[in-house]
Length: 72
Image 1 (cartoon, helix red, strand yellow):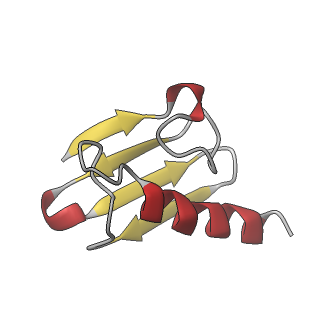
Image 2 (cartoon, helix red, strand yellow):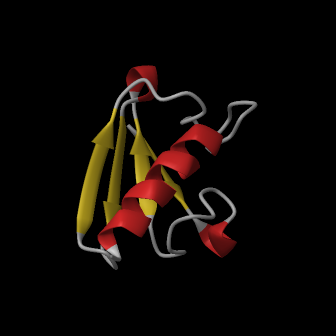
């Protein structure tokens, strides 16, 4: 698995800056979020890889929904 930071919230703008994500084969993604006390695991999500043309757009949308739901 490769891991990616979120400096300046550029990678996933819907999540806190101090989050990271681990991306493995076939877009297996582990997203630990210490600020919101979450660990999210997703598979085969479009745009999950850091080097894809749609860098994290589907992943950011999904994680944004999860983070928003946790704040309620």
